[in-house]
Length: 249
Image (cartoon, rainbow, N blue to C red; front, top):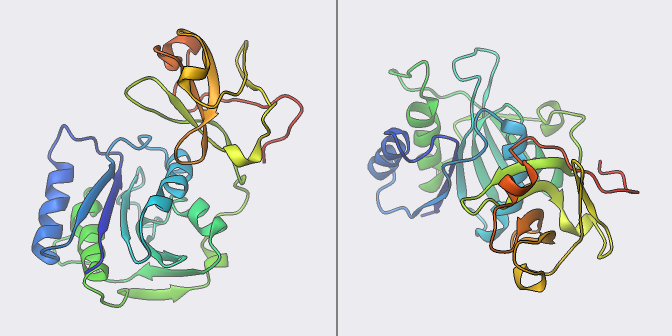
């Protein structure tokens, strides 16, 4: 039995994640279900795509990622998708959410989901469509869809790295969509009127000082030792950053 990882912008306050888990428990009993993000950037498949691509690395081959950041739910032009990238499975809306995972994958397959339940709601495809499909994959069943050429599904024009804030954690640290491997030890990060140098970790700078560092998932992250970077530098999801002297594309 394959594990299932939840990646959504639903939040934990309401009934949505619980209802999806109930479907998974009924359709794939005994499957391990991991909560990765319930607070992915709301209504923002682009920012979420860079997070998903960075955080997938902690999970094993054959893991099923149930991903719902779906502002276009109910729109007949938005296809439901299954993606297999380097042995991992991704189920969710075809709205760019899987773009970065697909671009970075060495091995890639793509399906348009053709199955639908008789009682599909107009607004909760996470529960009614994507969770049952994820459960099928976790049971080892074949994808219930038509296989497509990934080149016809991956949206063109997306940068390899995204120079903006894509997530702010509960401590006020701000993750960007830039992989730290793209930058050098001496590169500074420009955020509005501020210029931040690189440090290895929090203890390497005085309390109250800001810096950027490579976080545990390989992304450039802005932080303040014993403080909140979001408040100190006026950061929010979507805030742009730059690297003087370097083009991030």
